[in-house]
Length: 330
Image (tube, rainbow, N blue to C red; front, side, top):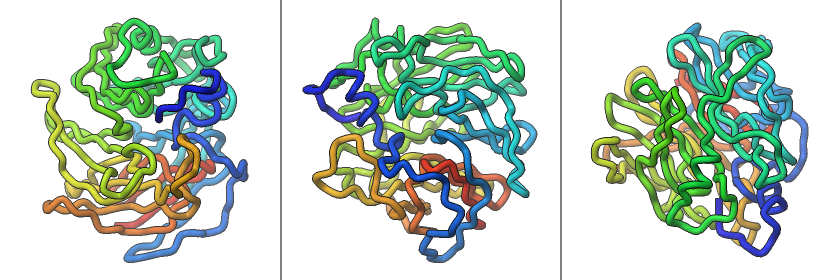
């Protein structure tokens, strides 16, 4: 994500490729509640996970979170935070970022999205979607990195294989965002990859689905001003984006609750002058309620570099860069 071209590709990819993936403090998980509460309170459910970005709710109602440091997927009991290893054997991240970045289910089969592990960034694996065949066995079903090499985007880029960020099950396959190549891809279970919609430098991140309509969060270009943090919608039949809302900086995810209210996850304030690819400032993230008039209202603020959002019943589950999961009751 971004447009830095003067450093070697691998150094850039490790240092600044994705603003959501880098924790420059190197801090370990903090079990203190550092959220400044607004209308609702955030509570720490889990800490100590290693290399967390994406998440999903499984068919059993549990929360599933990839851990890129270990190449595993954690299963988290949403009631008490009890955590076990659901699957292992995924490519581990190269350097400080990448690896297993998101997870999704089709029926009872889990799939993991893996990025920044390919040879162009110093890795030895393939960027793409892996099927979980057992507790210790995964199979690559779609090589998105190879597609990206063969079909480069129209926008500027410096990582040829792209930086895939989020995946969403869609009509027997997946939609996948590439935050560096600024596009959304459609991926089938037999490995076919096609481009659905392409953008300028807007940094597409999280996805949600209602019927045939796709909702997409956009972080916006550096310096990630609030007016550039947007939610847009489109369909695969008419891939023209329509703006739904804007007004929160560095949006990283979008989700509906069970009452069909739409929420966005803001990573927070980005200090101008920080290098491209830096995360938002610590403890400035927010969960935002999206209104029909296109505005957003913070539900809770002070979140520490959040990256993904899920809803289970009336509770929001928020994953952050420090290996934590927080809950917010609606």
